[in-house]
Length: 279
Length: 281
Image (cartoon, rainbow over all chains, first blue to last red; front, side, top):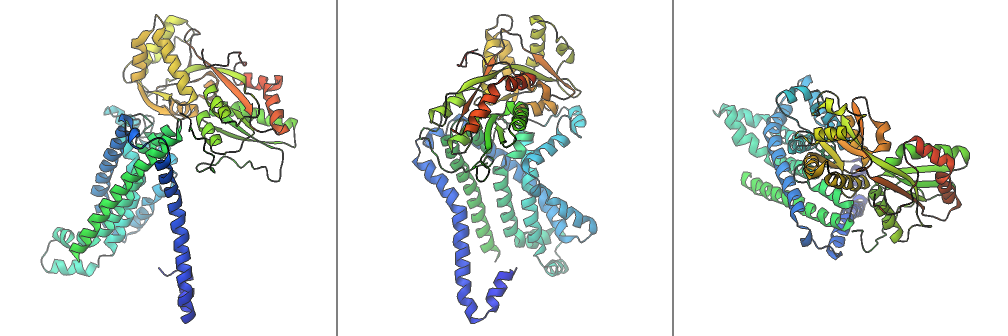
């Protein structure tokens, strides 16, 4: 997408090229500093303070870490299994209904997470719309690990679906048509052509969604509460630690940051590998 | 526990209302415990009507969170805490301008959701007016499996007071350890401030929660307030201190301690300030 600024700069001819570099590098420097400084400050502080990272790896933290990994993994499995065919139909359909659905997908991104949590209570809570039928089945969602997963899916799924939809839209329909005239079934065409071509977008979306699920806080504390081993994920453990000691909270934040980087790094590696393979 | 090195960098998260007093010099920023929300709103209104040129800016949250904000350079003129631990932590850093004094006291009460869809035996709750034996029946209902109880985090004043209440239940001859452990086993969430506890019981998502007696006015229709008998109840002491030497800070403090300030606090079910400074009940 050509931004007006970029167009303006490139349109000024020979002079322009000499301007573009400073504008670009200043913007880059500003942005990188803006993003990196707080994270760097967190790291420096974590490494220099008295509370050592290792001393914090006690049972409570390991429980929170495990719970975060477990719940976000389940959430991502659900998001991929349901979100992928959904994103494909969003990309392939031009009906008015699907265009409306397309808008609805992004609602959870706009909603403040705490509001999302309240909304989930009103829908799936004991007193919520689905409360009585669920109770009939002996299911009570609030304050359970399942509620943590619900909250994560709610806030994180749009990131995957949006990216997957764009990925599928970028696959030319003609390729699929040719593949089918060559005798491949629609299902095999999807597996052998559409899916591999869209994979980088799917993985990017998955990375974003996973990061969002790992950092989920507001909807979780509203809908699932805060109980060690049951619903206390890393962000909630950090909030709880903050009440006593900022030092532990900082150390825990670094652990969560490392976990997020690990997940993102792994997905990045797979993405690069897949990309090379398919080209 | 408190960040030992006493860091004072600029506030990084959730900045409190701007209080840099630029322009208007008679703004009084008051950091008050979450349980004081309604009472301090009323006090602020009354104070402003007496001092039309003053503006009171309230920042209410869990006392321990206010303490953290103060430790990291948040500017406030007055700090009203729900317990002495948080006040002493602030005083230890030299942030108070004058020694803290008790200005109110509070007791604990149990909120119980008695609407439909809950897990409580409602008949057991209706023994409300009777003394100790009836209270035991109520507690037994709460200690039954399936009951969902929401408490404050251990670090938050309401959480600490609740822990002491559970110890008192454990020590009481007719209640005992089994009862206390039954209650502990039913805890489904630990909230960051007392208002979040009230909210979850009001919504009917939790069956019960331990709050302050002064919170009783916040409950909605289906919720009962179970008073705790004196021998096991816990007294919460609320200290207040000026953090700046501005005359307005002192004036606001005086007003809180004055008869009219105390009358407002009484009307929100707070008790009078008690002698004991420590936390012991």
